[in-house]
Length: 355
Image (tube, rainbow, N blue to C red; front, side, top):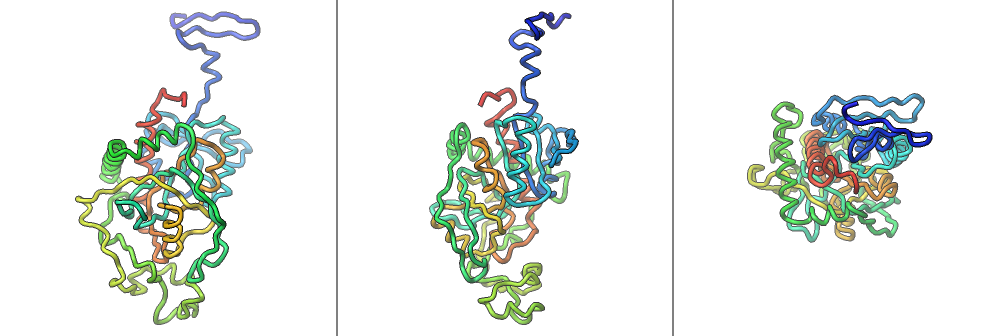
């Protein structure tokens, strides 16, 4: 053989190929990076920027089906559990690592709710922005979300560990944060030029209402409960747009100058995670004030403790209030996928698996 020669060593054998042997290669893990997304639209956004077509991995009688593709120059394993929430996401990661070995990086990718006016931060958060986790706060819903408040366990954020902590420290610098944001926006521009579903919406579609102003029927509610504000908001109102409900636009806050002057941004901070969708602006703001929370999701609490190599990268699709809509979900998911791509290329490039 011109590339090396076989030699026997007891019961094993190796092919000398310079600095590595075939035995070493056979024992090298196929995957070192895993990506977890729970919604089909999140998977679509990821698939749209893969450098290869997604392939289903052999699964036999496995509980979950995993897929793979080339992302940021490396082959990654992708988990897309059948349901959202902490339980399925956690189980999918546990079984993934049992089958493919411990991952060096696990990215929880997709969409989240954002805190529009974070305390102690100079920059507000807008729809379409991306939040990268530096810590995760698990909290429990102990009371109905609307109007009655929320009972919380006293908990404190768990910070990122190991190399991720150092990476996120770098990401807090002006140089790396701006560089990552600009590269991510460029990838999103390229994607949106070929796929209309990922084109940026107008700034007048970025609606942020005063936290005290709720999304309810004010003249007539088909479920006959929304006319009494202490009872909560019925599902009929949740599924009706602000325009149809005639939400009073005088309660809207002006969000930003034209997008050309304030492009989509990337923020690093605390994720709050629970098993219920955040739809209460006053609870949102209280958690933001007391624990510096920037974003809310339903999966991070299940995955975070499984590995010291977990980072959450999610795009803001709503403000975690009763006016929540799905209008920005595709754009938020696409911006998150582009950000994850640049994040890996910058901090975990191909060939740098000793982390």
